[in-house]
Image (cartoon, rainbow, N blue to C red; front, side, top):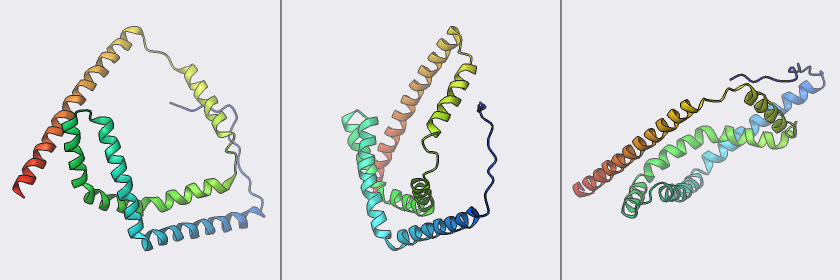
Length: 178
């Protein structure tokens, strides 16, 4: 898909007065990034506790939403509790690697105050132009796509059930051996 803009993109010409301001801004945002990284390193225990709380709430909500069978639901909750140490290590490494940049970028967007009001209107115009260019599917192809989707959903349900049973059996065997 291509995005067709109604107005050509403007070339930005920076006056010489704003260049030192941009350099200062970039340097200060690098300082913010370093400070956030330092905060994460010094408050490692706090970050891990926050991730633990998020995992506890998120895993229970996800299991309750996806698995309706009561006995299977309980087994999955037990499995999620056993996998918590692995999650803690992986999540902390991901958090340490990615979150300082994400937080810094988000904070910069909050203080930039640039053209945030016009963005949704431009996106809506681009989507409207693309919608006019798209050709709808014929009725027969829509029906065949619908049947294919139903078949794929059926296969996903079977694979999910088989995976859950296999994980539950593995958990039982693991507990039995211990």
